[in-house]
Length: 503
Ligand code: AMP
Ligand code: MG
Image (cartoon, rainbow, N blue to C red; front, side):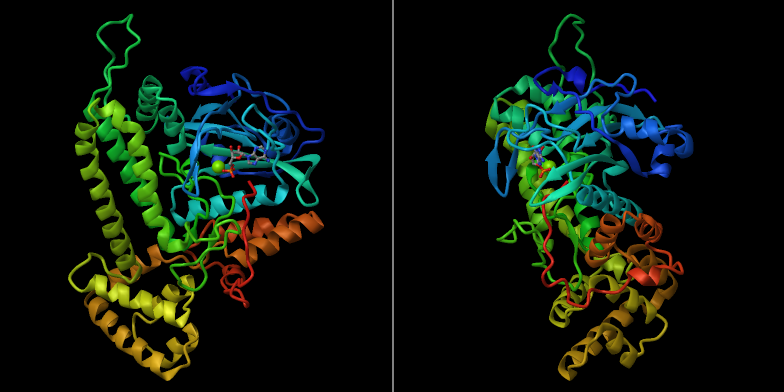
């Protein structure tokens, strides 16, 4: 295994050299073999476990690695913090996969850097395992996401309210460039750095936007024209549409969509306080620090628009010196983004209902459904699976029992809605079934199962419940024998469930 250091090469304004702090007794706990294989990492778990524990705890450096802590800023809950940066993460370098795509290899929980301020630079085992489970589940659900290559326990305690076992998680991401990375340079009015970052990001993520070298070989000037920056921004927006619509499809609540946790690649990043929605309610929030519901389930499209507007602020000066001219180029894109999110959302919801193409009346059908689901506290995952079961014939009584609707008045509303839905899909039931099967997972990483499994692993040291769970989560659209163990909604509706910024 050999790493390159492309981000490091951007220079010292972008990152600081920082070595991970070795740990006393690293033991490899989880290794993502399929991911390792796709990255052509040829390790054998039986022969190389010790070496892997050394590498992926940061105790021993991988060939070619020049670890850095990346600089970034960020709006946290709407307030700008100009100095964030990797306070407990180290970017070891990057690696190409079999198809030639470049991936960042980053350790998290691997010690302090100059960006740490008061933090200890470490990560507790629970949140590390949680990130592994959630990101693997999201990947299998078809949601763009960073992934975890490994979890290594450190043999050292981390001190939160009580001492907890420490761990280092290795994150693989197509990059770690955040909206906050652009904001870091915008806050310093370092427009050359913004250009440099833009060129780097275009080469990494959007090579279809061609950038030509300046004709003068000795010049450091970056030949980036305003159209390329506009195209870059448009490409980022497209990625975010897919991201947010995917979250909304599976009931994912990111929980902390600060601009430093918004990757321009459109990958889900930072699994700290995330959670899954049970019954449908657009205001659903589990994060203990999100008191005003800024990052509630149903706000995620709006917040992504806000984050992208913050990114636009950073790009304006490199589009045109005249802000009004630059704005005139960016504003239509932001308007289009709002439309794309809305259209993408309804098209996705239509697919969940077995409708191939949105047509007149569908938006109303969807909105009426959401209102009914909210009123009936229908479970977001179970509902669509149940509905699919009634495609050949609606059996009303069974439907009411399955969804848990007893009140006659609500039953009547459901009956009316079901009739409308059926009329809409009946012409092509085969396509409807295929679409519904593809868009409605049978199983998601439900909060109560995740927490129960994490607790079991931590108290008994036995990983097999977690591995069994992962096997099911890796095939969320296939009914395996074991799937049924994880499909139940929580008996208490997760009433007192709260998540924290752990990893
Ligand atoms: P996060 O909650 O992971 O998005 O982190 C926000 C900022 O706090 C980032 O700059 C982190 O690097 C930093 N941070 C969070 N936890 C720690 C920790 N235990 N030690 C050092 N820095 C931390
Ligand atoms: Mg973060």
